[in-house]
View 1 (cartoon, rainbow, N blue to C red):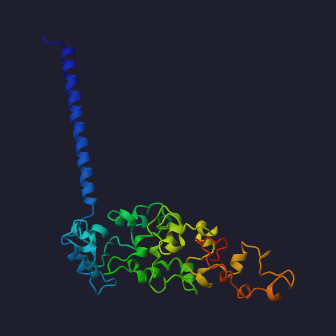
View 2: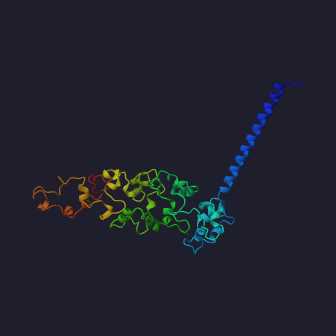
View 3: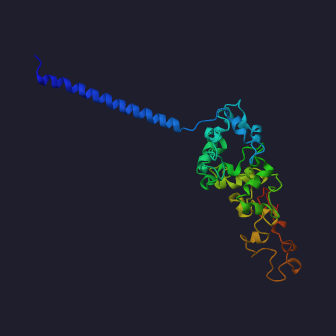
Length: 324
């Protein structure tokens, strides 16, 4: 004979088990529904890839794009390139909604592009480029001056052209000058490096993608940058001119000057900014102190280097005054 209490004890576990099954079914159904919603909201790629894009975006469009096939970006046989993955949509994102047939008066959904009118932020745009271009010269982009100023890759680079202007020495300075106007003005002064003639590029000295060195220089110091071309000024010298190993810009303006040899001032004014004229043999206290009673014609000629010609240093045993 089964007692009523025993019936209740057997009923409770079955009731709990049924509740667990109901809850599990409710949760599993909810998770499946969420997964389905996410799948429905995930943008889709076009079926034909670049062929779909080029049906509208050809050479007759506002922005010609066909030249991209002349660049390393569009090499399907190279697994590292965008076209080996999702072609145009590797960079621009899924474009099925953008490319679909529209109904009457229906507005075409936008697709992320690059530039000022892009849907993505500059940081997002740069992230697309850095997915591939994050080694070698781009290692110090994060935290660099251009990144901190919000510069986007497309502000300097062009992808849909056969030859990116900023990678061509004769055109690079024009791209940099869009922001660095003061440097462009200096490079057109009387004495300057041959930047405006295309014989030298900004990237010969600077690393635009970031550097651990001052002024995003390629070399550890400014002097090392100068010595990469002007090796004869490196030394060491038996007789050194103190400002030279300290910093070349003590006397020179690297981007250009209206004085000879990129000097900040003309001699003797530049020299006299450190050296007093007192006691110099060309300075007369009385007319009898100098031969012929006249000051040295070399100083009157306007340049200390008429005598002190080895201003960067001398190895001559008698060159203590840098004159030989």
